[in-house]
Amino acid sequence: MKMIQQLHLVSSDLAQGTGEQILFNGAMSTDNDHCLAGHIHLFNPSSTTFVKHFVSRIVAVSDQDYNYDALIAGYANSTSAVDAVRFKMSDGNIDAGDICLYGIK
Image (cartoon, rainbow, N blue to C red):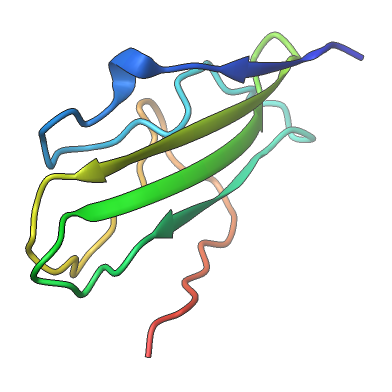
């Protein structure tokens, strides 16, 4: 078993932008028994007054069989309501899994 490493990705934040946010910046394993899991909390996405703060925690297995625990937080510098969220891989696609949305009325 290899040690869990915690990623610190200061250079991967949105800064003052509204573009894509990197939540895991490692080479994921493609082995059938490896995965990525996590959660993202987007605070008050329907607000048209405040910027959109978020926190996330993503745990994944790298292509070198290390477990990674990535903690990311920040905000998108926009007061527009969030009406869509997109999840994408930097290379390839998501083969299978569930993306669940909670807290929407």
